[in-house]
Image 1 (cartoon, rainbow, N blue to C red):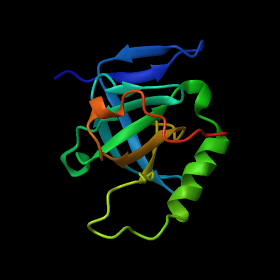
Image 2 (cartoon, helix red, strand yellow):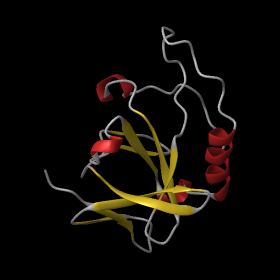
Image 3 (cartoon, rainbow, N blue to C red):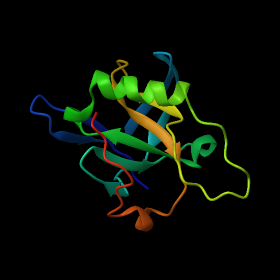
Length: 135
């Protein structure tokens, strides 16, 4: 399986290189580098979803925002959701809410997106829009 490095050129186009590296960050501190699959398994108006290749994070997927969507407001919103998560659901309750787990950055610390639980199959996600974001 090949990997790709996803970077953005000056015209905000994706440029593909040999692999895609992202860093897990908490409180703006980069903690660990992980790699993502070459191509997203789903994509939409805000960004794309990528499978995580690191075995410790295989139960998560990475949402990488499109370049123009990587705003400070979105970063702040993700941080708020992480810091103000609701109480856990009952063990037998169906999952109705998927919250950001960790923030993802590039090698310079620039916000890219976040990790979320891999709760439904990629094919089931196509065309779903659970809520509209104003961010």
